[in-house]
Amino acid sequence: MQISGPELIDPASRAFKNVLDQLAPTDATVLIIGETGTGKEVMARYLHHHSPRSQHPFLAVNCGALTESLAESELFGHEKGAFTGAQDRHLGWFEAAEGGTLLLDEIGELSLPLQVKLLRVLQEREIIRVGSSKAVKVNVRVIAATHVDLAVAIRERRFREDLFYRLNVASVTLPPLRQRCEDIPLLAGHFLQLYARRLGRPQLRLSEDAIDTLRDYPWPGNIRELENTLHNAVLLSTGALITPQQLRLGPVASSEVPQGEEALSRFLRQQMQESDSPIYPRVIAALVKNALELSHGNQVQAASLLGISRHTLRTQLGHLGVIKPRRNLMRQRDPSLLQPVRPERELRIGYQKFGNLGILKARQTLEKQLAGQGVSVLWSEFPAGPQLLHALSNHEIDFGTTGEVPPLFAQAGNSPMVYVAWEPAAPQSVALLVTHDSPVRQFADLRGKRIAVNRGSNVHYLLLQILDEAGLALDEVRIVYAPPKYPLTPSDLNAVDAWMMWDPLLSDAEKSGQLRVIADGVGRVNNHQFYLAERGFAAHSADLLQRLLDALEQTGRYIDANRHEAAELLSGELGIPTASLQHALARRSHQTQRMNLAIIREQQIIADRFYALGLFNRAIKVRDTVWQQ
Image 1: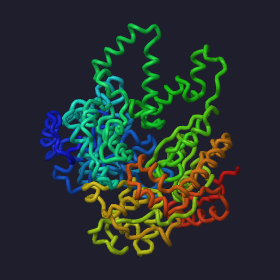
Image 2: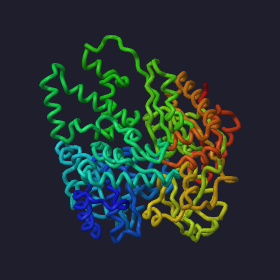
Image 3: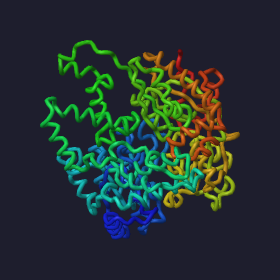
Image 4: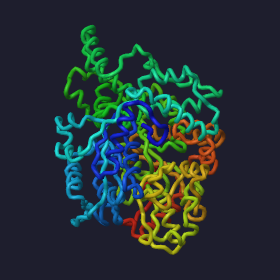
């Protein structure tokens, strides 16, 4: 629901907006319930911007993306030395949102132990950092959002009833898009103008048949699916008029396809009556298959679509034979499955959509090369290097790419990772930015300012270099640890004074003119890119690792020779204009190279600097974690 965009006219939308207008001026905790893609975060931002807290931060945390081992630290913060790798005090989401609003998205995914601690925070309005016994008062309005039925979760003992009642002070249900048909043309026009303007094609318009097609489609992915559909149509259109064919909507758009829960029940009942084979395994198989197809093989996203955990999804994939069941549990339970089966190998790749891995995934090169060889390629997307390295350390992925700093933090924390390859330096691809009207003109002006930085990333290292160059200590600025994002919302602009960014968001910010660069990495950091593998995977799957590196070398040559074409591929994935992506690709080399002594020495220099600053609790030798082919 795009309240900040077009003025919606559907009665369901107007009724929902009236409820939000009543709740916004209050400090009441709000629970927003709605299907995936309906715009729950947009609603939370609306409540914030129309509240007395609008000049303070609005922060959103996806509870489903919090890893069990770090979730408490992320929410409530930790003290220096609280656990291995805790090099200094870290303020959690609650303290970072002080005075403002904190959205706890997908609250139903929070673990039971954390639910207990969250309940106490909501009751006492205070948090206790990990490693501390001192309570810290917080002044934060909490908004929770979920797409799952919490009443069912309570019955299944997956959600605490007392927490539900604490969150459910004011509960609002966001109608799905199919129940707000009158809004579809307005929203479609809004998204068309947005992406047409962003891609320099303002003359685009929808044909009458295209509008009718959009109105008749049931939109199982809701507004998010509608936005993606219009974005894709803008990218693929060749003329000024967008037709139904360019919308690329599947056959589900037919009015004969059953819609709604009642139609689904009728369809299932009919299948049970007419089919001799059991329906349950067929339904589960169909659900899993469609979720994987819609998420392009990303298990985390597929699990989110299904409303289950990734572990549950992997169990179903094992039952279906898509991946090899762990510990052969299926064979232990069912002796009839003891007959020989073709072994299935997994190659689990963590990636950020930009760069060689982003292009490799978009072109499906690796899948084509490994077709028919019993290898399943699974992709997991990450917002930044530290999060990717955490997944690798927990054996959730086998391979990934980050900048030069995250692997050093990972090695200091005894991560089971090894360096396998690298790409040349790209110091212009990282920078510190401020708004154009910011009073910050030189480094000294940063004193006391709030700077957003992704902890343990390359831009974290650049920030240290900039502060050192300015003669400023780390405690003379206010660090806000957060993953990078762009474009920035009004609440983002109110919450932070400066941002540490890297490509492609950096290039997009420069091209848009919203932000200006104070300093980039030239003369300060090298900003190399490294490819890393889990040590055990590198040892027992050296053949797959070699194939992957060969594919990356081929992809690098393709990017450097076809930058515009590569930028167009990434534009569809990232929703960033081709011009911005081409600019980002042009200022770095993508030639993947094997590890050598020179690059190991450069990494060691950074590692020694971090140890001297007290950011590592032990000295490390980079050479100890280099893959020996």
